[in-house]
Length: 345
Image 1: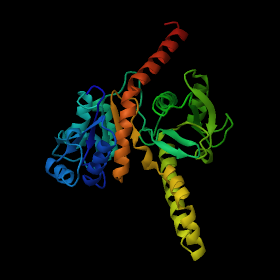
Image 2 (image 1 turned 135 degrees about the vertical axis):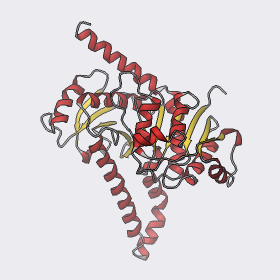
Image 3 (image 1 turned 120 degrees about the vertical axis):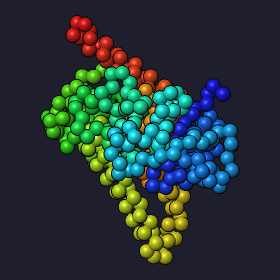
Image 4 (image 1 turned 90 degrees about the horizontal axis):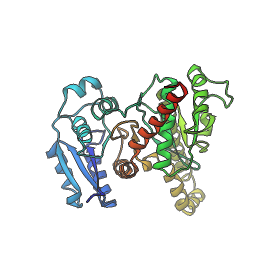
């Protein structure tokens, strides 16, 4: 079928592989008949997990890969030497258009290196960023970058803003997404050297809806749709976000069990509370796409379970159908053309 999307899944990557990647793939196949899933890994282990489930056999296949890249391995060396690893085999499937997307919970470093060296960057993209969706009071926001580029330059952050805007508009359906840069205050003169240099560049960019600076406390309120920062700041925000969220949920649950009255109250509010807590569960939104590549690569947490794998796979359908990589390339081409005219080229 022409409308089918093929997703290669790293069945050997993550803390709970191959059990959770396989389970997530089965659930994704059941949820959407458009997706074809190739589980990349050691066949005997993958097939042993598949045998536990009833699933649409025509939607799931196994692609052999004998090696595994471990989290502690040097990424560049691992990508070069382990040619038959699940990450390298899956990346090559995307490169050779044998798959539309690749999903992995394996080594972040190896996924970043493989994405750039095997799948390849879109022409004009300086640094591909990792961009997860994070839950907010108003829905979700895109945090870009959260782990790929610790030492970013102003030009990189401008591209992050453009790519993030394309993603939020095309995948999430947000019209003219609000773009903000993470800062220690809302005043334009505040911030470190990187923020001060980047701010006017974002302000001048006509392709984005830049609203200025955003302080960390306003991120959960949904004050911006695209939150721009370099990876060190982004990763700290993401990890703190996850830690505080998990702690609050734990405290709320414990508080409801302290007395008979609180237990009765808990029963009454349980349906509404469950819905609210679910909306703040990051796993509901899938993994973080590595934007700016010629094909789609999605990185999920190493601790990902079935739900995050399932949603990461389904996320690939919208991304592919909306031709995000092509749209990013078009935006960057327009920007280059504009710069050429300004310089009389």
